[in-house]
Length: 217
Image (cartoon, rainbow, N blue to C red; front, side):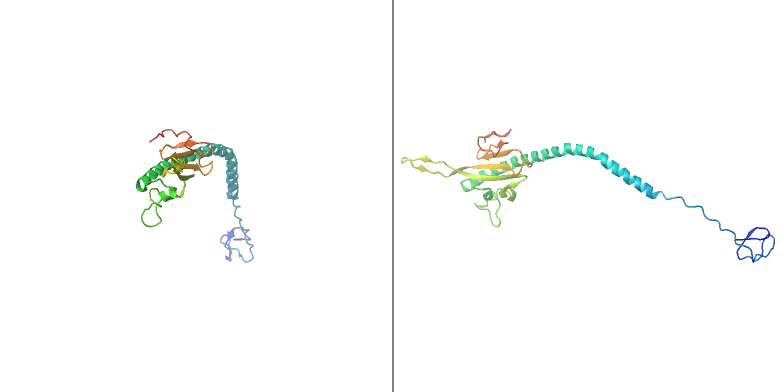
């Protein structure tokens, strides 16, 4: 805008005469430009910093609480897992004992290994792969426990020449032991009588106490 040198009224820059007083504007100076007020400073960066600091402080304040919760929850979870593994081991023992008795009924003697109770790789069931348990149990490892089965021999009797005559296989011994202390506390044992026995200090045997609810068949 231009200022009229005569009356001081602002007129258009391209005007040749003042619209107020009619004076010539050829030499009239330009009116000073009116500057816009400064824009308010952005608060976005400051807000982000405050949020980040608040998150960091909250995290460090929460660490002791999280540690307390972990100290309570983790041992309980481990105990629950171990209890589940032990219950699974007892259930698997009962399955194997039943399978061993079915094997004897089919082939006239007890199996000499878990593999003989497992399914055949191909073809029909046989004395070497009778198909009485699944492949997982036949492999000897399940839910944190290792299983092993051995056939026991008849100790025999002395004949009139004081020679021991061995009889046919008459039983079996089945052990279930935890793979690590974190997968189970108890060791289990069972034989042809079907009684499941337990020991916390090492592999179980026929002399160990039975688990609650286990009795002779």
